[in-house]
Length: 232
Image (cartoon, rainbow, N blue to C red):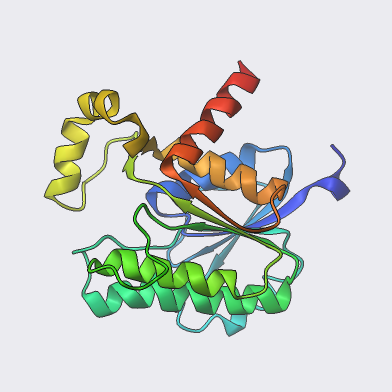
């Protein structure tokens, strides 16, 4: 693959669980020529493809306009767990930060594809009693209206961390403990973090779907299965 045919990818949330895997996969992917990681704290990774950009205030992304120029695709994994922050902060991170980043990216790279880490149950109607569902739905609506040629909305259910970590709350500790049985009983309600990350990067850089496309957990698992079969 020649350098001119490679894609320029911008990644937000590279220090998070899914974002970290997305970064690793993008750096290994021959289709990706460069990765610009917009982070709030420094990464412990050095790679010739990687440009690390420290940006602490996602409420204002105006200063990123030059960095975001000429990008082919974006993978947006920035988020927060319900209960880990206040309701106001959850909405700010989930909705406001997403909209602000998309605004600047759209102005600098109007033809970029946008892959967004949403969540199962995201409610674009705004009627859900669950704040997380309403906020993810609100962010989805804003992205679909932003004018990008392609917007990919990933709605995973339970994301299995793969590597040991400090779980954010009791529910996640419980799900991790019973994961083997849960996976057997409810296979379409789980997805590995590394598989989800790979799917997001692949879809974003391939850009095979035009317009808005929603991938529920079942769809993501099917993508992952096809990818594994093609490399077997």
